Length: 82
Image (cartoon, rainbow, N blue to C red):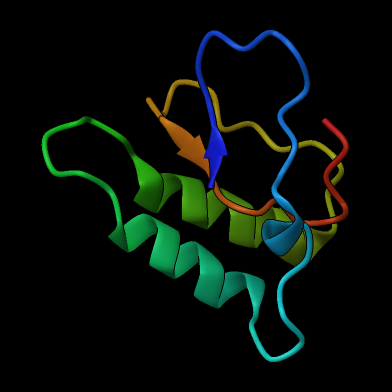
């Protein structure tokens, strides 16, 4: 997972998160990430996964996950630049 917070620089994944394994899909990774949300934290990971799926499906370069109270980010699709 990628940390989100007061870090003002670009958030970069660890080596193991840079690319999904050949037999693992983005969708599987995102569902796992969504299921790991801490109850009561107010994160809207289900909405984030919907937006991620739409972004990947439509090969959009812009992805808005703002206002979802996310504390971490999952692996983002390669098509996302902003």
